[in-house]
Image (cartoon, rainbow, N blue to C red; front, side, top):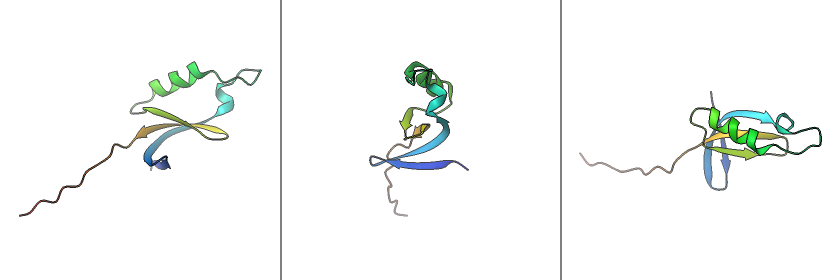
Length: 71
């Protein structure tokens, strides 16, 4: 079952969470090119969110409009 995450009035499906330390060098600098490669390598992932400890590779849920149909 996928995890959902609500952030800035949008809902995302979390496909993968990885520790920030997985993308840092010995000096503690984050290699954003590696983060982008991680995003691009995952199916349906179109955005990366950062928490205090993790990057979340997520899929944006597009706004839906409900239309009532009369029978």
